[in-house]
Length: 154
Image (cartoon, rainbow, N blue to C red; front, side, top):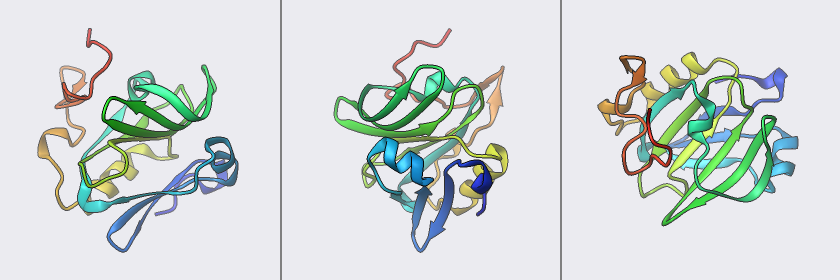
């Protein structure tokens, strides 16, 4: 799927049985990391997080962290690792993955988050129906799961 190619945003692609987050060259340099590859079968939830700061969890490790400007790289939590590539101010596509994935949460800015999320939900074979991005009372249902949330919900 083509998304954000001309804007220097990451692209989400399906290659065989994998989801690939294709980073632009400058984000690869900033994160000191190549493209991110996760088995599609490991994707459990796909939501659009409109409050971008909720997608930023754990302690910054390798990458670039410019408050209010850019977040790209690896973040560590106890017993899990996240990968983020987003700019604040807009919605972020968040993918929760199971234990077969090198990352527990992928948070990515893309050009068309709604269509990218729909596209991805159609391709993830083991998607948990509780976290598909449906909203109830202004909050996504099942997101963030209690075991992943670091910021208390209001």
